Length: 120
Image: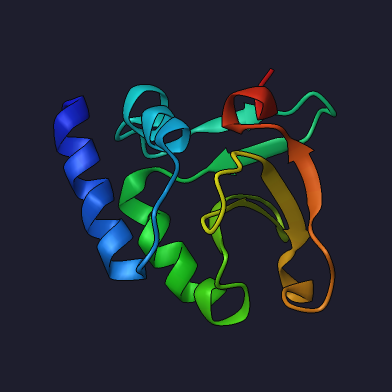
């Protein structure tokens, strides 16, 4: 798929979840991840994180009921039981993490100022 087709699919996801993803994150999905089945990165701390492509973003958020528990966030990837999130209710591009079993009960940890800083 080309960038515009991916952006159209992302718009459908936004409507389905009732959210607005940041331009920077949409750029990352459409230019870096594209339609790759597996997009794994290593963070500056050495953690291996699987970042979701647009095709599984909706399914992963529905599976973990993210919007029911943390309606301001979208799950964008995982490292085992640790979920990686972005806030969709602010102009903030920061990436956060939290154990998926602790959703709604603990504060999320800031991992990076934006998705591109997570991988550098």
